[in-house]
Length: 502
View 1 (tube, rainbow, N blue to C red):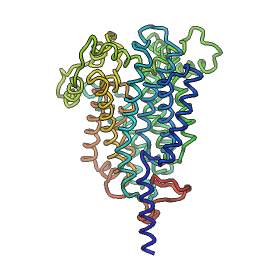
View 2 (view 1 turned 45 degrees about the horizontal axis):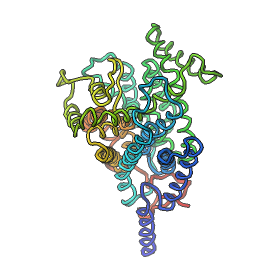
View 3 (view 1 turned 30 degrees about the horizontal axis):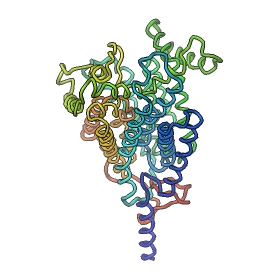
View 4 (view 1 turned 120 degrees about the horizontal axis):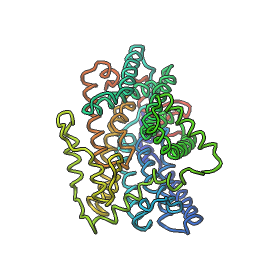
């Protein structure tokens, strides 16, 4: 009996190790073949058979399908980062070539093929970078089959207190002094931590708590006219739900619908912001106005007096920015050779509450320097990670720098994933620290500043607050369902292993 168990364990362990980035060799071959065919068809019928367009479409499809295939095996946060990057850096620039925007400044500054020759390997480097550390944690190590326990009454009370206090902070964050606004914002995000903890453990009552948190976020974003945070948090909640519900094809449909919803928001965002600036509307009136605008756009039969699709597409397209960097650097502006990275790390380690003279508006300064375009004081745009790496190190250095950035984010998430095998609440804590990495269009300083400061806040809370020490305990709080020597379990049983039984 013992011999059979050891043989079964070794066989199962070998099967797990044979996987790479969550898929077996056979699955990878089928995925690559599917994406090659899809990319070729799209390129042939819509872009005159351009090989670089075919490669871009194929890579986008590969990232999208891979995300859906592994979503039931772990909370696929690295896949979400890669998916957003592939939309902004590959899909949107390709589609924009067929639907150009009205303003010439938003056109590609270099030929599309020239841009894609850098964007494709850089996006692939980011994709691999954010995944390989998680692959090592979840595939090479021995996996135990466990079922998350529902929250104990004391933990429920603690999480509800966190949820209420965080909702209050986030609702009145604008009323705090600018020096502590970021701290209040991070503390306010713990309402999502609470809702995710309820959701992950499937404790009865998790649905209304998630609804309250998301509705409050949507209402706040609607009142301010800033929607990217809704997409970021909504994306992570979707991944957690897909993980707990074992979604694959349904996740693909949900992502497609989410993209459609984001497009609709972009159609009405300009009109909505104009409404906010010209009307002294109450909170409820602002939310109601946004809903009415979105519904009118969905039900409209024409785009008369509205934005054309090319102008909407610019909101998702980072390619035109990267292309301008490729045109300006190094012909007009020399490579920064790591200067922006060094400055970002320096500013990240200086809290504004202790250094009130810390410079502001770095994004606009960098944008003007490396693109040649001046932004007004009310507008802020990032170079994107691949754009900033190119501005510093050129083609090969940009690809390598993007891989290093992705690897650092992947290593941080892999740490959360490892801790989550002992306490599911670490899955809920991960987005508090790493949420900014979902938006690869930001500058390195923006992302690093968010990650470092939020990680510090999380560390302090876990260290000094008893409730967080208990919820994020390193001791196991799972109810074991199988013996440690067994890796594969049936489809019907919820588990946290990565191997699907056929």
